[in-house]
Image (tube, rainbow, N blue to C red; front, side, top):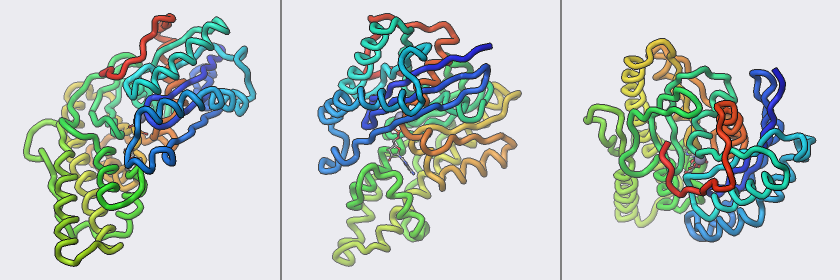
Length: 346
Ligand code: KG4
Ligand code: ZN
């Protein structure tokens, strides 16, 4: 068996990314992975501004692709295909990536594969750990939160998920409410590490409900109330208050995710008892406290646990190149009618 080398392009949110992944026989290798974040561009607005994101992607994509190829020591003639995120996401950015992929495919004659961003996250454990199908996946990011049985590169069975906000969004809103910079996840995690998680009580929504659906929108309301109560009492919040709130908030998220994971595992084991692995993916999976909890749940229930390295948990193009290779092997080829899709459930 030979090799397959794919360029991946990702521009669905606020990271412009390009990467080259090569499959040698059955062993994948990330030859390069370039991620250009936009944190500074959006910092003044307290969230991602779609128009600013779209413009930045359009300006930076070419350079990211050139850099990814040059870091891999390759040029376009060494590639076997081009994979691009075709959704879901902010449409301006997705369009920029899809148009670039079409241009490259037209210029080189290379096959093009449109990839669902969520499938990119979901197939990452196969890139990093060679995980076999099927496996149970908890996908937790800024825009998504769901339990999926990953049966093949094209079959994802949803067991449950958030009915409102995603946890990443809750982390970002928490940071905003406490005057911390975006993206909130890493900052809140760092603050939480210095705080007392037991000082403030935060709700554990939907724990009383069966199944593995979740809700995180109530947490930001609870945090706002807690913050305002502290301010009313003391006239302001100290560094320690802030750390304790972050710690309490993070513990609530981690406990809900751990308990719902326990239930998802039970459902999964009834459906696919032969293959017992839990994998996590998505930006929030970069959270060490959360990983620790999920790893403990897996160990308790006798499951293997796979968590990709941080740089492959948050948005990147290596996961898109890899998903492109998997879909290409499954026979997928897209034509120049490939659509950019703002919404695209798995
Ligand atoms: O997967 P991702 O890069 O983009 C989406 O597809 O959403 O996830 C970004 C989200 C952001 O909300 C960010 O705050 C969160 O992941 N995040 C974290 C951590 N690192 C990133 N959340 C909690 N703890 C972290 N260490
Ligand atoms: Zn993502």
